[in-house]
Image (cartoon, rainbow, N blue to C red):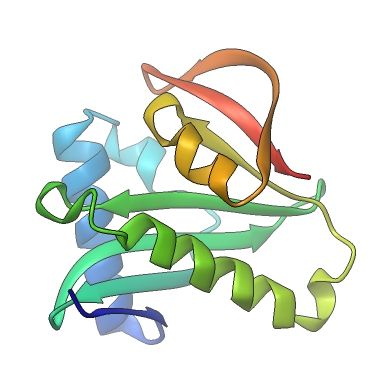
Length: 144
């Protein structure tokens, strides 16, 4: 499968990102729309994954007071288990690496339980206890 992950620049690319997130989080996982879309959309760096030219995944990262937060990793159900999450994570981490303001900042995320193994492959470690966010169990994870 040919996978391409690009920064989502411009309104049309971001609209596609938001539609993927809406399908995965709002429709499939019953996350309230007002929790899925937040005040950080404009300051975040968004990514769009395509397989065979069809949009299948999205993610974003942003600066926070704690460091750099990776979030909103979403892969459409028909594309799961095909390396889309790994491709998104690789692209996001690469983008963070080349950002001049990211040097030396801690990278962290809140992982849904099912995604923990994916992040562990990239060196993220669970920190603290399991917690619930939007009725979904999570772990905070930090890049070692």
